[in-house]
Image (cartoon, helix red, strand yellow):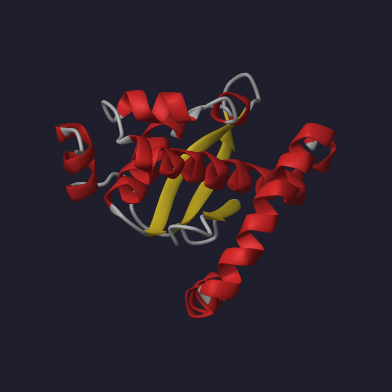
Length: 166
């Protein structure tokens, strides 16, 4: 059973949609359930010259929990520094949604992975020196799942890739 907060977030998601000319794009998916999500970020610098998420959006192909967790992570990450955003956990998302059924907790992991990948994408294009061995290993782990999902849903990934080029 979903909480009222999950259902409300699903019905009224925040930050839904692709961001044109995003500074970072992250995708994540689950081979078992078939949920796929993309997170887009625009990065700026605050007064302390730290990179922060100025704008964030998402697109999700999935269930109620997948859409709700995607929306929640964008709310949690917006206006956070990249370092702060990398510390957002599944527990933060679940708490923000007033709980998730145990069978849907994996959706919160997908949203953290998609955000991580968007930040990783930004770093790889703009600040590769900030990519630590730990960040690289996590990226490779997420990438292996991405490749499996792409084989199952090639039409979705083909369409998304086409959208990104436009």
